[in-house]
Figure 1 (cartoon, rainbow, N blue to C red):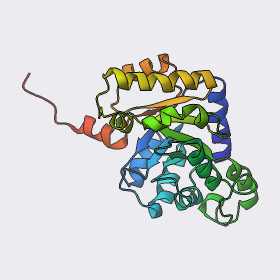
Figure 2: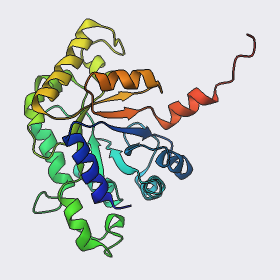
Figure 3: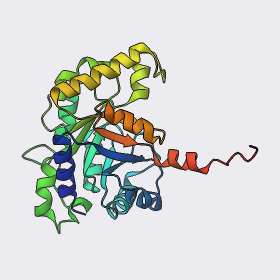
Figure 4: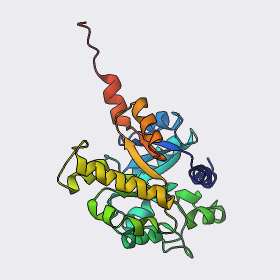
Amino acid sequence: MNRLEKIKTIRNHLGSDGVSIGSWIQIPNASVAEIMGQAGYDWVAVDMEHGAIGYDQLPDLFRALELGGTLPLVRLIEGDKRDCRQALDAGAGGVIVPMVESAEQLLDVRDACRWPPAGARGVGFSRANLFGKHFDAYRAEAQAPFLVAMIEHINAVDNLEDILAVDGLDSVLIGPYDLSASIGLTAQFDAPDFFQAMERIRLLCIQKQIPCGVHVVMPDASELKQRISESYRFIAYSIDAVFLNVSAAKPDLTG
């Protein structure tokens, strides 16, 4: 798969007010990743923050996703320089940065993801450029990997206008559990204060023309359609483990 062309396709689609639907994996198994890669999503995020996945497993997971033409992204552990380098050198097409609370924090991560002259990431042979075979071709991709900021704290909401102004930001993705926890309403998604915070994010993203994302955790096509109708444009649809839990439940035969 040509990662750069896939990144451009997603960017162009989002830039024309299109919707990009991806998914999420937490299970460190290449066969699971291959199934997810063949499921029709634009991208699949490999969860390094909450999943049981090590950096040494990323190349096989990425290969499996790429077989289906699906762009591999990584939700970083924290977003330090080592996180960025290892994920991207392994062949991620971009990163999802957890717990972004300021523009300065996002700028540091952005620069850690980019080769010079655009950033400060170390240059070298890696799986991302087939250990030097595609070194020259990889230069363009390494100047601007796909960049998503997770907005999951009330501090980020207060600083959102500055965050959205960071050059190179492709999308934001709301983290509802951490966002609700940051205002003392953990998982209380019907609470008025939580709804108000969500609306502040959504409406400012629309105003600033930055695609706003949300995670539809439970596989529910009606909720997915509802989120699209609300102008969410970068949507993660469920998780490999949730798909398995939902489908594996023993049917009720008593009715």
